[in-house]
Each structure stands twice: as structure tokens, then as C-alpha cells.
Image (cartoon, rainbow, N blue to C red; front, side):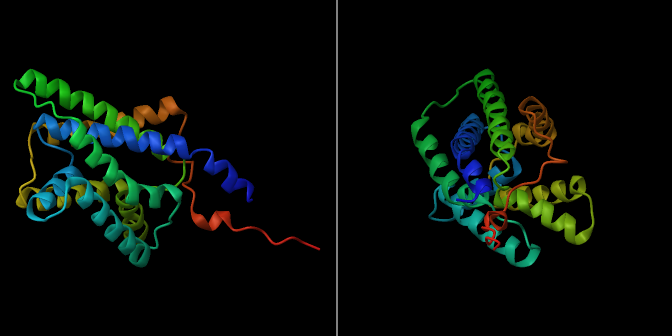
Length: 218
């Protein structure tokens, strides 16, 4: 077995732990009812106007985005990319059914949202730090930035604002939580990256191309 692949397979438990924490945090912010992140608003809006659950929308949209990113933006695909697109939706639906608590006061909503935000951003940082490949949505920013030569710091807000606007029109919940998420999630992810010893500027994500076995030389 390719040595690079062998080492990456050992990281899969950490990858899925990141997925679990990311999904748990997302559902907690949704249950808080104060507004979700931009992509969460879009997923929630689509779930309201289709027959799909929140998790199923996440899977379907993730596969569509991944396909378009690969075809149009030449996005690199790794184990984490495929796993993100296929499994996070199921984990989201699991937690949505499991967590039945509905906060009644704004204090309860605030605590639930803040807790969810911290858990969600740690989960995102953890799975990205495995270097097994970015999620489908993360790949958009990188691909568009490479093609347009515009910094990600400008591309990312533009894409998220588009997702937020569409989700709001479809009935997704937008509130103070949405604003808090947009303002602070990036800082929290960066903080966790530092604690995890991961530098996104220098550490590249893995793609399947790197698993090709080298031919033996005679």
C-alpha cells in the first residue's frame, strides 16, 4: 500500500470526529432559533420548499457543488472531500432527531447558539486539519480565487452572501445568530487551527492523485 495513503487512512477517525462535532454544532445553532450560518440558512430554506430533510439537502447540494467544482474549477478531491459530501448529511439528520430540546427563553437560546458555534467551528477546524481534502463548499472559494485571481477574503463573503440571500428567500431563518456566525466563525476556526498546530497557508490538502503508486524501477 502507498505509504502516504496508509498514513492518511489512520486519520479517518479524526476526520469523522470532526464531522460529528461540526454536525452537532450546526444542529444546536439551528435549534436555538437565532439564525444559522449562511450555508445553514440555504440548507434550511431548501428543506422547507422540497421533500428533503435538512441533512438530505446537505448531501444533494454538496454532491452538485462538488461535481461543478471539479468540472468547472478543477477543484482537487480527497478522501475528506468525498466523505464530507456523502456522510455529513446523515449525521445532521441523526442529531436533528436526537436533540428534542426547544429553548423557551432568550438566555437558553443564546447559550445553545454560542455552545453550538464553538462546537461547530472546532469540528470544522479538526476535520480540515487532517489534510484529507476540503469539503465541497470550501473548494468553491479556492477554485474561484484561483480562476479570478481575487483573494479568498473577498470571494468567500461574496459566495456566502449569495447562499444566505437565496436561503432567506426560500424561508431559512436569518437572525442575530447569522450575523454573529459571519463575524466570529472565521476567527474561531483560526484560533483552533493554532491550537491544533495547523497552518492553512503552508499545509496543502491531500488529493487522490497523490495516492498513485510509483512504478518499481528495474
